[in-house]
Image 1 (tube, helix red, strand yellow):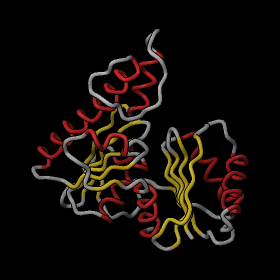
Image 2: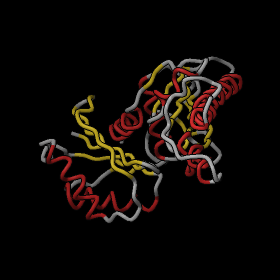
Image 3: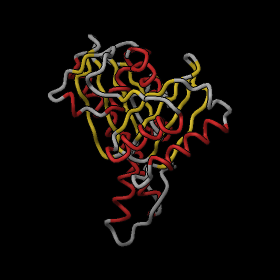
Image 4: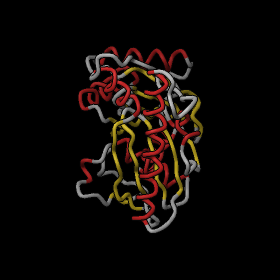
Length: 253
């Protein structure tokens, strides 16, 4: 079995593959103060509860949180007894990274691009709805040519409530109408429907630069929230895309 770990800004997502199937998955909150021992005990207990502690033989990690990369890597080695593979732009992969500075491309974005190239036709646009909303573009030659990064819906909601004196904190959910009849509905409409309009516009611009239509793949926690409000519908919604990309990278390396 293969343990895949994606360390994001809000959550650490773990998945265990048996062959090509994810048989277990978990999400931990990202707290940069956690020590390798805390992290190791968390992970070990999760595997023990699933009765697969002795079945996991390999591990691969992607991280965009520098403070947690080494602690998680050491935790896996100390508590699970596995030397994990750490994702980087220098690995063998099924896409070519054709950006100005490949070393600056996030490990999760590399994983997304590799999963898209493995599972879906090219060109493809992966839209990852996480803390940030990111676009990862794979052209028809399976080259990762770059993308877009913008504030995610959670960041927008937090910015509205923290930088204004009267606007409340809120959970991201689908608004009933475009015209909000109260403050919360007005905020939700601006965040969700406004984000959807931005997504539509950016897809249009990306396809214009590609010179052809692309396969649109959505992933991340908020992809299902926004799917009803975009004009250009997602071709696929794959919540496990990043973890699948980690598996692809592990198998190639």
